[in-house]
Image (cartoon, rainbow, N blue to C red):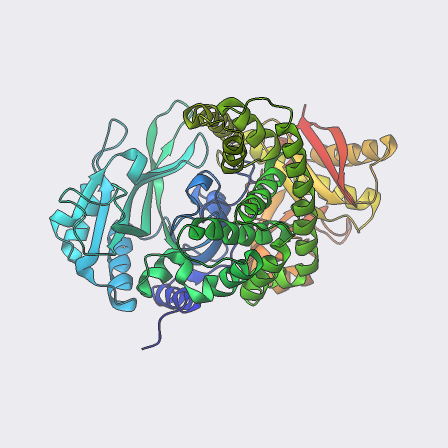
Length: 592
């Protein structure tokens, strides 16, 4: 019997949930359109936050998707058999429709009937309860009824079996995770899911969003309870093919890994495995990130892309690769995924150029690091970390140089400095979770509607070549990126600002209709993120059209949230602007 490929899994998942009344929706981009709570889409729920908070989804209350995601919070784990920065996440969604019984029964049915996994190898974890929420016996009892014995159901604390909120506030709840016993061998009598003993692979997670966390830290039951599930394509396909190593899945990693072996002149065996996995993983992620218009830089998304590329280069050099090599691996990624994600094929040349430029820059940086080393009489843990942080200089390389000098690096000192750096990075990342669509506050809702007014005003003042390229909204301000050759003059900024405030003063109505994407486009609705839309979309209109006044001020495909009348917004002030790239301008605006 032919082994199930990753695409077989995706199709089977879609077909199964379509039979259960779900509508397939497309993956949203990695770069969130209007959500500053994260740099990248890290889970399937991020693009759906407005709908989890009560907005009506144009495709209904039962959804299924395969969302592309990027996570770097555990980047140091990449290099083992199952951690990845970029990955695809299958998910089925209930927006206030079915609940735990259906979700769990369907999970069990899909795993054991559709995928033919051995039910005797399935283990389950559930939330053990704490002061915020009770023990999730409701889920465990349903698992027992479908056939999982009590001894294979493990209760774990919030850090293991609770999801959310994505920001400081918002929807959250207990989850129930499914693990597969990959070995059957003895790993000690106490080995169980959550122990990281190497025996269990987590393959699916059912999240039950039944609470809303408030600013005061209270957990209030949600009026509409939502189900959010996640199944990693890499990991599940590996299990279906009998592997305990994701990188052995040929249709996902075959071309990419063989290209990595060829360009580094090493084989996927022994001590080389970790470095080859990291290079392959990071190049795959870098290809997807750069396809969405992100360029390497020293902050935010650009910093993540830079870190991925430079880390791949470092591991290549550790394998003895001195010549530029990443673009050949990038080409293999595009070749492998382009048929499923056409944007990769469309942007292939640009992707390779971005990666090539950054690889060349980093090679020069490494050379500077070597010159810096020559300035130190003694190499120690602190200096090793300085070289790592400032030049991306690998600890292993510093240790080799120190050894040649008859010196030794105290790894504990390096690790102490590294821990401090890691904590600072996490604190900075946590700052990204303030505001945004996750809390759907009044100010965020006002500013979100303001982006429509700003977009329409820019097109009226500057011309219809203006197209939104991204936005970022917090409760304090909006940030709006758009296509235009040069910064606006003071007179143009005043015109745009006056036009926005004119519409606010008119107290125009803000309404939406749900319709087909083709119909919305035919009617002239702006749609600059077409690749993220499903067949049914919401079209928001600002200002009712009439025979006397002509078309509405703004008509745009969007999710939400929005005010109902522009008068609710107050006064808008454009605070500043900056040129952020060739033909790209960024505007910051606030509410006065």
